[in-house]
Amino acid sequence: MNDKRLKIITLIVMLITGMTSSNIFAKNLGVFGRTFEIDEPDLLEQIMAKLKEQEANGELEKQRQEMVKRAKEYVQRPTGVSLPRAEKINTHYYNPELVLKDAVRDQNGAILYPPGTTVNPLDYASLTNPMVFFDADDETQKTWVWNLIKDNPLSYITLLTNGAVIDTMKEWNTRLYFDQRGTYVEKFNIRTLPAVVRQEGRVLRIDEIPPESGYVEQ
Image 1 (cartoon, rainbow, N blue to C red):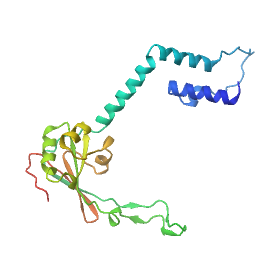
Image 2: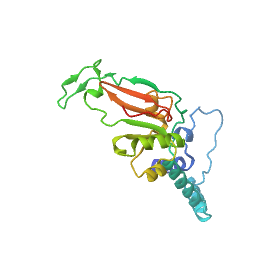
Image 3: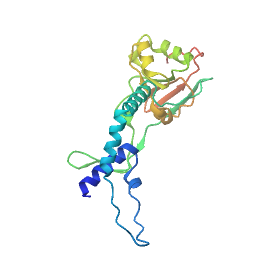
Image 4: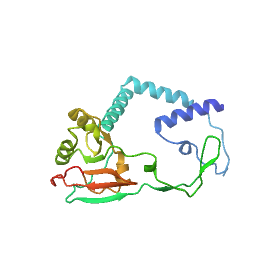
């Protein structure tokens, strides 16, 4: 079997089984006894025959429809995080400063910032609009956030941490975002919801707010 044919067979097996190449080829442990050449069946033909069989009996179409269904479900409800509802106002701050591990150079290669330089992104770009995080599966939070943003929805960057993002966008007729896997919730150390994040000078202020608190934008 030539190398090109072997690569084709390997690729097809990987696509069907989800295995990596390390799963397909075993480690060579040497020869421990007498070996015999085996008349190897045409693996590529076997695979193609199996695919044709699955196509004929509708199995391939069933798998395709299942993949489409899962994709639509993920778009509607991405992987998020579920946090408890805030019971008291909790305010803390996030300092976005970072220390450069590598030098930052200009287009000519000259060093602008050497390794070890402390940089604050807020010195170069401001958080113009506050961010508000909430769980759309909690109707109390959802109502509170809508009352906060309804007069000017685009004045906030509104992020769901959990829930049906597409349905909520259609209901509110505005742009929404989703904090997939709680990336920003973790970064900002948000522990309860809803939460409002806004810039104060060179840091970000995070307010976790009970929906019943009568909070007024500050």
